[in-house]
Length: 184
Image 1 (cartoon, helix red, strand yellow):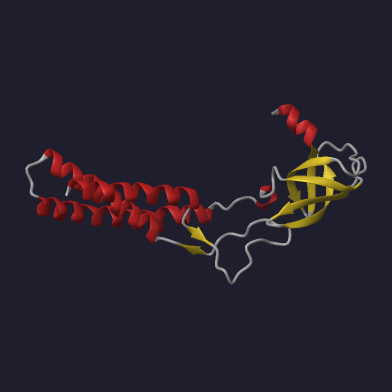
Image 2: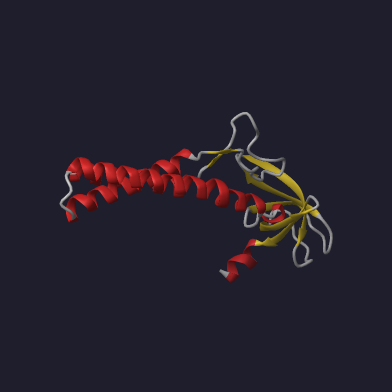
């Protein structure tokens, strides 16, 4: 029975890692995943079940194994105690996610001006001093072109490699990659 509890514990650990890597928010396949600028749109579906199952498996495996190794309880009693505790832990995880974590994340959305910060691009039309030109970058598998302005007001020649700092009113504020690279 100890091996079963260990297997359940490691399954919970694996599911926890999956939740950390992939998150719990999923895109509805019927809705576009990015806007016209290539910025990702917020997901519309939340997979509550995965972290709840991960918490259940972690707690069942850990508590069951611990009870078998440190107490004189038989396997059936250890399973019942661990199962009951795991149901409570899963309920707490579900309530925490639905009543606290997700609502807090929705109240403080990402600033859309900085959604493309750090994306590399190429100047395709000269940017004059304090003027605008054009920058092209790749986002979500397609090439997007935007009006561009230098963050420091200096001119940029076509073909220059740049990095997007922010987008304001449809204008990408860009900086030469060589300047960014020098700071790294």
